[in-house]
Length: 131
Image 1 (spheres, rainbow, N blue to C red):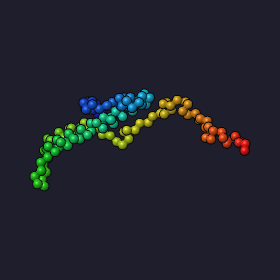
Image 2: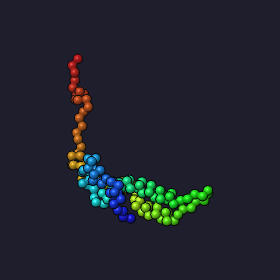
Image 3: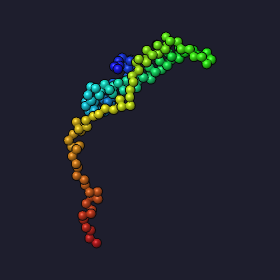
Image 4: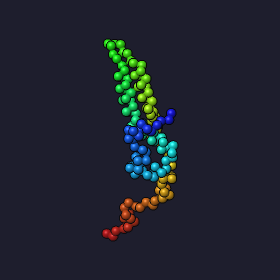
């Protein structure tokens, strides 16, 4: 199901480029494919849009609900309006905030070379002291 960013833009949701740029992750932003950017953007938009949509829908549903003792009457028109508002809800799953990155492209070749370890005692074990 496709979603429109119009609602997120009207609520001033940040773009993935802005967030990664401010956080200093420009190299990661350059490595993301368009599909990965869209997935992360959808997740960020859901964090902004979903609470607002849920509150609006709940308010409409409660406005159309009347209580008469134990009898509950729901206005069908208000229920339809609440469901129509829920059409802007952006469903996300547990793994929507995860993307796979190729770390070999982000790191240079020196990151994979083994470095020579220095002795911790500064060479004191090889020297002899005279009494």
